[in-house]
Image 1 (cartoon, one colour):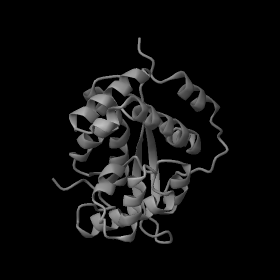
Image 2: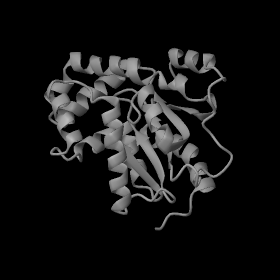
Image 3: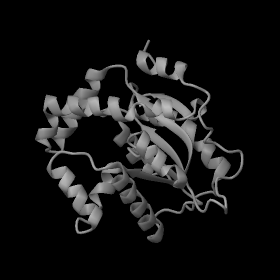
Amino acid sequence: MRRMHSASTQRRVIRRQRTKVDMTTDKSPLHEADGLRYQAVMLVGPPGVGKGTQGKMLAQIPGIFHVSSGDMFRELDTNSKCGQIFQQCAGIGKLVPDDITIKIWQDYMQTKVREGLYAPERDLLILDGIPRNITQAALIKPYTTIFKVIFMVCADREVMFKRIRGRSLKENRIDDSEEVVVRYRWDLYKRETEPLIDHYPQELIRIIDADNVAADVLHQILSTIVPIQKKYFKPPLM
């Protein structure tokens, strides 16, 4: 029988403190005093867990707008100030500073609203890879209402490593398939991203078993986000 999540994740969930600031509200998340807030569900998980696959499927559903950090950086204007900083960081293998990452995210979201591709009052936002860490979570807090934080977990780390290597080779990113790169990405997730499970209130956390087939994982995710759509959003235009 498969474990629903790793022992370390179980321990984190059990010991999570209930004294954290409650980030939920019984009222509608659109308040005049606060301005328009992006109403979102976060999709979090280690590299190779299948986040990208799930994000692409979710993006096809009316009333859902999926934003991944990868898509955001790929659409960045390389002539802009943020674009130049991104290129400099990418060129030396450094992460983009947290404040710059969130500035890029803000500009990206505003662009999608202007283009009519995303309507905050109609579309549930899926944040995939954003925020990457606790600092970024604090930076986006004034602009978002987080309904749920979906943690995709896989008990077998080697399965995830195999997925990363296979995807990198398929996309002709040979360097990314090297063992040292794969393990660096895993260590980075453990250090930077996994602590988010302790940052958000327990009632926001939803653990998803990503060991299952993609369709079953999607079913688990939809069972979480569909009730949110029904409660807070207008029916999407078909």
